[in-house]
Image 1 (cartoon, rainbow, N blue to C red):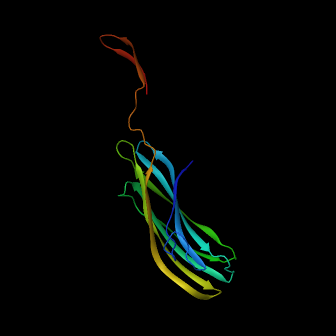
Image 2: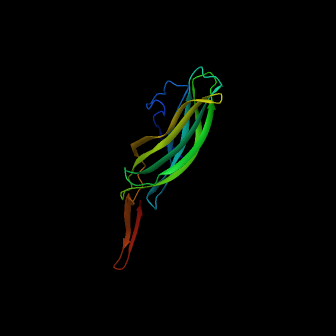
Image 3: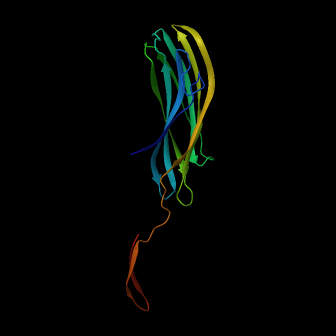
Length: 189
């Protein structure tokens, strides 16, 4: 069972802030990051990043208005701020107005990343990348606004991954017999 670590969003394409712009539509990228499991022998964590496109539509936008969106979401995950490979998902979507204010989530798929832990088994997850988004707003078949592709970067750090044990801890031991040539020892770890 995967453990959700963090959900993170870019700024909106039109407004360039954390709130949608004053247009019929605006759009931003979002990722959800999960710990899928750990490989104790390799001292690694398996990370899944779900890539999403979030299309916001303004109240009063009739079905005659629609957004045409493209998004290439490219992120990496690693221990600390260096290393890791960028992996991407892309999608093209259309969304019509329906008279209500709402955000519609389009799933773009997942990428999988291997994060290498420190020699002591600890790791601090760092994720960074961008959503390169373009948006065209149309009324019926007439383009009324066009926002060309722009990389909206985002990153987060400081998520401590579960430490992978690197050595056994001896809890108790017992010497039951000893002779000149042998020892009989039991222990728990």
